[in-house]
Length: 276
Length: 289
Image (tube, rainbow over all chains, first blue to last red; front, side, top):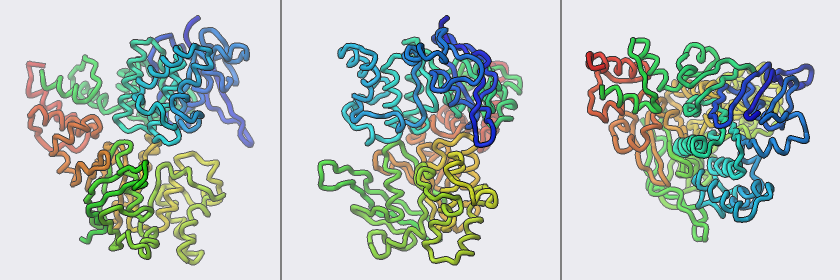
């Protein structure tokens, strides 16, 4: 079966004198081609979830299946990790090569691809993150935001079916952040890559088709952004605020004005209202 | 009010005269009164952090002059004492924590000020309180076991304990979740209430600093493209349209209305008021909606 399945997954960590429950009884299915947003504050279990998906961590209880393959089975790990790529929040921990180009080629070369195919993929990935000019630079001399883009490109070049991104925009300025999010949307729509975007920033996740909100290790809410962000009270109770756009829509709806269209930005909403 | 920071025709070049020469700042003029809060905004690589280092004499101008608390930073003998007056909180300050317990970490700078240990203690406790931590339960803990957000507050307490006249914070919100960001805003606001303390917040996020700042400086590729008070910025349509989507949400509404030539009834100061304004517009078009 294609897709990602989590069946009753729990993860506990040993501490000095007890156990800390990071995730408890998580169940969900992600289909190929979906764009999923996972939202939660620090300590909600988001990063543990990411590490469970490619078998860096094994569940304490339950099963994690990627295209039907269990992450608990060592023979299938290699195939799982070719299918599912992860971009971690701190790029310094995953950059290893002295030249940007080599960094991005490292994964594809290890897949046993031909040099011309590797070259093609490196160019494609660099273009997507807008770093073509930095091709021959040394990664460690780049700014934090640029390193984050290189880390993303190096995973993209593996062309995984499932792309998991854990806080990929934390170091980016707003312009670069918007660029990266636009590219993710494009990769999802045109290349049909499954996107699983993990963030504590509700605005990062406005492009997702479905949101999963984690709180203290459990699934707290699920639904489309409109459904989740439309419930300000419930989100607010765990310290999360919906993006301003959704707060405005809710305020208008409470006054009896129905907002049917799907807006992506506040100026678009204002524009629509002024046209009426 | 006296000018506490006076930057005149400042330019800074990294590695001048070499093949790697790079002009980081071009002809910058900024002056700041005591007690003001300056928001310094710019994209990645715009020169923000270079300017921060110039303020406390870590580096000094290639040309032009930087005067801080009356001290010309290009004079070496005077520059050496500037760290006591200008506290600089770097990006990700939690990464530079090195002492084995919280007390020693916060006290590190103080112990270089020749204070008595009882004065050191009272300042450490006061600083921890100011960043929202409970001193008694914190002082003996090892910083490595604490979360990133708490470690950042400890690093900031170490600077606050020095009671600097000017506090410069480089990207204090970066990487914090919404709860951590709110705590950081509270620390900054508390400092603002004390009218004698001057603060500079550097951020690539205009949303973060616009609501707090008295003055805004915008850097782009080393050039100062705007410097002035917040209301003044809101009249600069050219600059605003460039950063349209980076404005706080309520200003995005106000700006979008202004751009369509629609007069707003009252001043819009928050998102709720922005919503009320939209409701007013819709109801005035009744029958059409």
